[in-house]
Length: 120
Image (cartoon, rainbow, N blue to C red; front, side):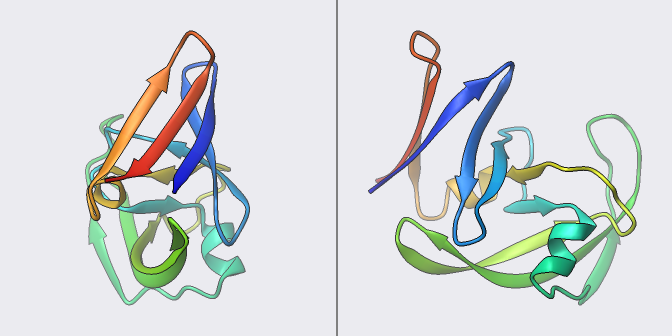
């Protein structure tokens, strides 16, 4: 089974099931899934723990964490979600924590602007 996406500008974009959210594959993000607060509220997540983190832009916000289930290669997968309380962004990020367990192959084809993630 494969997850298919596209290259939009400089972003690797796909859709995250079962929510239908536009998601950016971010190989610089070591977590599993990063959401906006609106996405977290939409699926009923509640911060079970918070922790300070340093982001790529140098800021150090407090992140909230909870567990939830996503459809990952046709199977339910317990996943760690994180978000910044009060955030207003739109992007959902898929991190390498999700891509490496189970192991996947990420193929970025600039010739046809496609992205493929395949479970190994």
